[in-house]
Length: 204
Image (cartoon, rainbow, N blue to C red; front, side):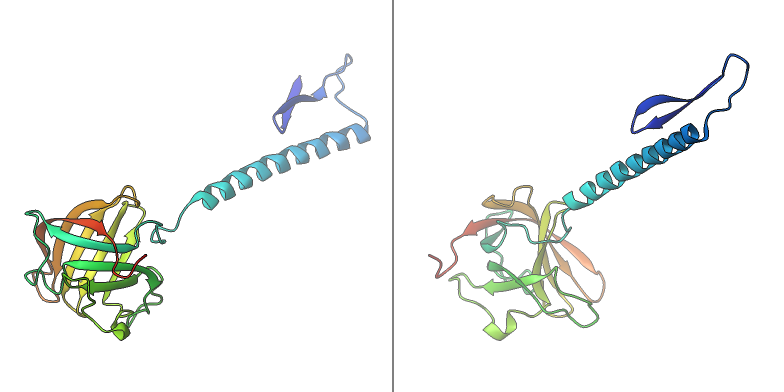
């Protein structure tokens, strides 16, 4: 009879029947076998933990800042016209900043939302500088769906632009625009939309 065990993948004999049928081995030999077995279990545990830690270290935050997305964009409908007042609280041009906004009432943190500056057709801000950090108007990226959202809320209602961004460094992104209402219907699909990257006013 032969009993086998593994030490980090090595196959070694533990007990081997003697000619007279005895399986008795010296105590020090049995101790050595037990130590080798424990060492093998330790090696397997270390390898598994290291592999798990490596996988976790490669995961990115779902709504972390994607380099290349911040900047200024012009927003167009499917007919090639800039967004206008018919899309509630929206603006034809936007400036997406990397700065995070303060959390709104009931939110633990606003780290996933970033400053959205609404711009008119001449690239002038539609709000004062004090309003830029307001959480109701913001944008955020979602790495799980390779998309980002621009929210034009006034507190309860507003338009939301959802754009696919498989490559953050692209100049044109396609998606759709919705209007969200506090009272029903809560979400209304307003059709296709695209954003085109443009130079920010005052940028070098």
